[in-house]
Amino acid sequence: MLQFQSFYLHKVEEFLRSRLSVLDVKMGHTLLSLRVFFFLNLLYRGQAQDRPKAVLTVSPSWPSPGASVTLDCSVDHPSAGWSFYWYKAVPQLSHKSYDYELLPGSENGTEQHLFIIDGQTHTAGYVCRAGRGDPVYYSGQSEPKFVWSGDLNSAASLTVSPDSVQHFTKTSVSLSCEGNSTEWRVMRFTKSYLHPCSSWGTMTGSTCTITGSWVIGVFWCESETGQFSNAVNITKYAASGPGKASQFPVLLIVGLLGAVVLIILLLLFLYLYRKSKDSCCIRSQSTNQGPARDHMINQDEIKNMPQYSTLLHGDRCLYETIGGPVEAGNGASNEPEESLYSNVAAVSAMSKSTK
Image (cartoon, rainbow, N blue to C red; front, side, top):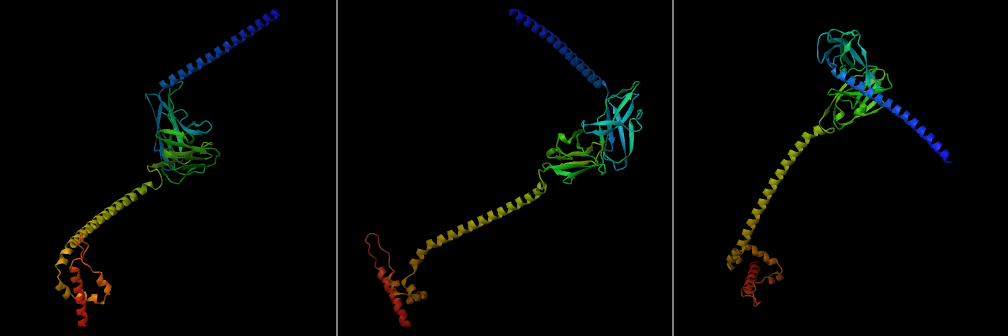
């Protein structure tokens, strides 16, 4: 039994050693492949960095329909002997990039760094590169440059909703592609950067929806068949919503009118306050002078005043309520009370006899 176990363990050990050796060989091959890959990548990067790069400019960027467009290709470190090659960009939606086809007349390169395209009628993209020697040593390829056209064509067209080239920063804008294709992408170019809708908006079918600060730049559609649509240059307002810019002068005018009305009401309130204060002062002065004038009226004046004749028609009990001042402390009426009543009664009797 022990002999069988030792034999079994020996076989397992041999099997593991053989597997590990195979694994080491495979790992060695893998590491070698990785080393070769990184070496070639570094070599390519070094050659690419040492290689001069072409720079392309187009003029004009927005030509009139049928006008000529001039392509100008230059090299970072110019020297004699360069030939220039011109390409047009062909959209590749599956790779999210472009293929490039040589333009007619530039298959063998041109000695001139200028290339003129006559009768430009639609949006298009172009690149260039330079080459020299035999075999040909090529420069780096230029960045794609675009010539935009606002004219619609049957193959591809772009419509903007709301239908305007100026939009507020917080509004939502829909860019719809139409034409002889089932697959589309919307491109945006701004500040030398080129991005598809998937990088800054939401692409649903053939419509791209964008909001916020992305609503600025040049937009156009590209189809799977390699077609370019018309281009639209969209700018934005600084206001955050419709009507905000036009509301500012209205709010300013309303605020000024409100301030003027408030000042007028305040002045009117102060005027009424001072007027009421002056009338109160006059009333208090006349009240203080009243008792002194009453004491100056004597009994003869009372007899001669005609307005007291109205007392004749009054009730007798009215005369009984007239009393004189009561001295504090003794609770008794002074003598002028009886004389005052007798005077009133005398006046009454005289009036009756006169009648």
